Image 1 (spheres, rainbow, N blue to C red):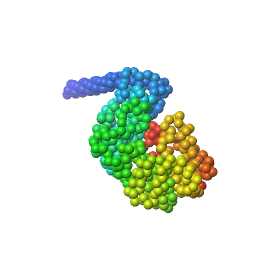
Image 2 (cartoon, rainbow, N blue to C red):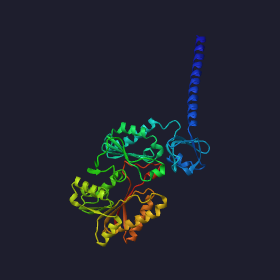
Image 3 (cartoon, one colour):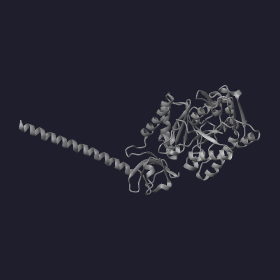
Image 4 (cartoon, rainbow, N blue to C red):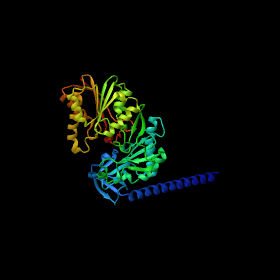
Amino acid sequence: MTVARGEVKRSHQRAVSLGHFVAEMNRFHFVTSLEFFMNTLPQVVIRPRRALPFFSKHPWVFAGAIASVKGSPAAGDEVAVVTDRGEFIARGLYNPESNIRVRLYVWDKETPLDRAFWSARLDAAIALRSQILGTSPPRDCRVVYSESDGLSGLTVDAYQDWLLVQWTSRGLSTHRETLLDLLREKLQPRGIWLRTERGIGELEGLDVEDGLVWGEAPPQPILISENGLQFHVDVVEGQKTGYYFDQRDNRMAVARLAKGLRVLDAHCYSGSFGITAVKQGGAREAVCVDSSVGALELAAKNAEQNGVAGQIQFRKGDVPHVLNDMIEKQEQFDVVILDPPKMARTRGGLDRAAKAYLKLNVSAIRLIPPGGFLVSCSCSGLVDQNMFEEILSKAALDAGRTMQFLEMRGQSWDHPVSAHCRETAYLKCVIARVV
């Protein structure tokens, strides 16, 4: 029995040793195959003392942060971003023609940027919107918001059964067939329309044109739902991507203070602020101003759709000139809403933008009686919250008035802000009381 027990013990030891050997060999093969795969990727080497933002998961690697590139990656190729000491940071997509030379997507060695990866990112983005809306698939919202959803360079809006796609990265656009196929599979649209952002061709070397990329062309206009209202949207020829979903919650915030008041909706586009104030907030009257005939026609159609056409006036003209004319005629509004287009596209244009915002807000304040409200918005990401508040403070002083900030608001929930890329927090909406 003693011999038998000894043999059993030795057999067990041999089995353990063999199991350990097999495990070590498997680990060796995994590690060496991983290292081999990583070594086959082109490497983008970051300059000394420039790597911290990328370890902190900021997704943009600008050309000025790069010391060298090992290999010859083409636009859209996957690269490994490493420190000057060879330490791995992240994987991304390369674009030799963009100042954002690499866009980062994943911060571990084991995860390649393949179909399964893109599918998981889209699933997470769609799940967030479905959870908040309570519908699946989500409709009438922004479904993918670029960096905030870990998909830097891709924006997707859902308008009923149509998707509107916008590429802002040449690197990611090289994967468009995979991404479009996944969007079709997950969202079941009737059609997908492509819209391009102004100037993106020069910035990214991206050669794309507006048009149908799959399925049926969207109707002009599409009728969408928001806050219990319906709005006609032209995704083919309308501004930006057709509609400003990012102001959804701000429109209702303004409506809550508008009961019985006279409202001015400047840069009204499709009239959504003014119409919401009248229909949902009980405003007495709204005057909607825009320089575009097409925008005013769409706004009038939306007023009819929501049964408030008799309470809304439409005026065509350049907003600063219209405001000055109103001041001369001593018109007054209890609520003035300013939602101008982006005024600062580059840092070099910040001073000019600040002056334009200041002038616009001074004029608006002069139209507001004591105790009225200013709702001032800026979609210029380069104009940060502090700068915008300082502009409004100076505008009140220049107009000879005092002001109370009541709410500092931002973009709606379908435009989440990435904690690692604060540039995604672009929209400012300040609700203020003018005394």
